[in-house]
Length: 329
Ligand code: AVJ
Image 1 (cartoon, rainbow, N blue to C red):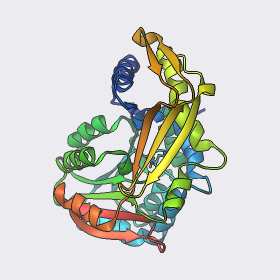
Image 2: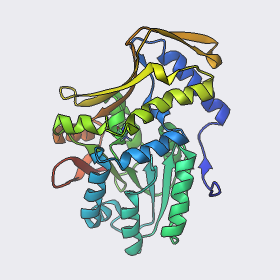
Image 3: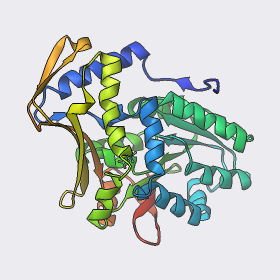
Image 4: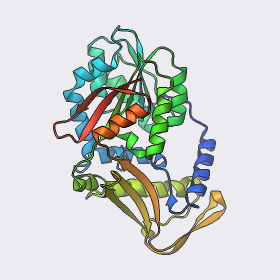
């Protein structure tokens, strides 16, 4: 067990539970019922997501790892200030940092002057990352921060000087199109034309391949989805009986999105103590728990332009499964 070394700039644990309670009260009162995929990532959810990344069906992580390895030289050159000025390398949703370590190793070997600021909502994931970096890259200067994206954007505005921001893994795919644009516009705010942004986008491809990545044979993705209900049981005193729920996911090639659901397999009423309320589910009613958008190159180009960025470089893997794109304000 490693000692926690991170800074916590998000709200207190009590406040977080209140925020979760408010979110659930609102989301389960809607039609269709909806919960944000942000709440997947408690410590257990982050651990399950690490298992997902190693699944044979889940191609994005492996592909982006390959891509970053292949284009490491060009990508680090594009991220680094050309005049050699020191900079902050800020990563949103750093997780276990497996892919980022490729870039970190390369930057250190080149004698680059930078500090790494990994940001994540899971303190366990972040402490694990910090411990592995102390071991593997002892000369790296690291400032881990536990925060959600909103708090991370506020933090960025307080960091003086040059910045390179990493947003890998197609995390951007979780936003709805309108939210995605606002998020990028907010991200552009604290950046100057000397700063860089690297975003990973999962590309549209064979729909069966995409679908399989979210419905693996071992059921790890199902467990990841169910963990949201386990979290509500624990943190809000909800009484979801997992035996009455199914994981269902499908890729819609028209909209370019994988949608994930929890399906109520019977009519049931679920009490939630913290909300002093019960929620009625009809047989086969769904809770929509995640969107994972897949992109085309023109969509990425338009998104960048609409948000006030210019596409400086566009890297893809040999199969065109994934893109890592360097943007500049
Ligand atoms: C972490 C958002 C990139 O959408 O592919 C994986 C999360 N959900 N399997 C994705 C996820 C189900 C993942 N991201």
